[in-house]
Amino acid sequence: NNKETEQLLDMTACMDVLEAAFKEEGLGWATNRTKSNISVPTDDPNLWYRYCSMEGGIKSLGVVAIRIKTDMYSWPFLHGRRREIKYCGAPGNFCGLILLFSAKNGEPLALLNDGYIQHMRVAATAGLAARYMARQESTVLGILGSGGMARTHALAYALVRPLVRIKVYSPNPQHRNEFAKEMSKTLGLDVVPMENPESAVKGSDIVAVCTDAVGPALSGTHLEPGMHLTTVRETELAEDAYPCISR
Image (cartoon, rainbow, N blue to C red):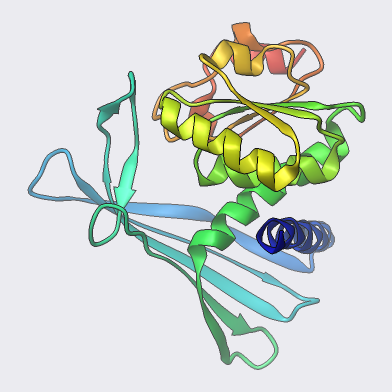
């Protein structure tokens, strides 16, 4: 339907723009600053405030964008693992903003909601990596995590490889079942919820780790030769995974 088509078109456009931006950066025509965070303690020892910012500019588009994010953070133990939980104002609410400026005359152009753009941007970057690095015959995707990042990663991979099956694991059965139902409809693929991370990874050509876990979510013992692997954050990989990646 229109919603599913729009999501795929948005991801296609995002990947096209990012690929052009990365090429321009290599030529010295675009630039960016690494994301930075500042954290402030609160009266609750289990709750911290965090401010995040990053920015970049590109010559061909003539724009500079500044992304800012303001959140309250905590790290509760949920579903058998330490999680990073964040919100703005109240649980369930979030605040990410993108300020867009002209690099031609300096004027402000737009104030954008970062929520949807963030998920698309991160997944599009992973999709571009798979376009150039994953095996051409990759047909099975394994995903650890079932949130917004997992959904957009599935979109990106489906656009660059002929996927026929997606396996998803989340420690929350309701979340993984909802993900399977939704993404099966969106992509027209066989999307199967799995009972454990090992079964989601085993036999997969591409593996995407998209969790909110603070510690490792994927062990090197789960990896197989020829897999294409991406993570949203480096802490999602156990130490024994890195020697496997280099082989």
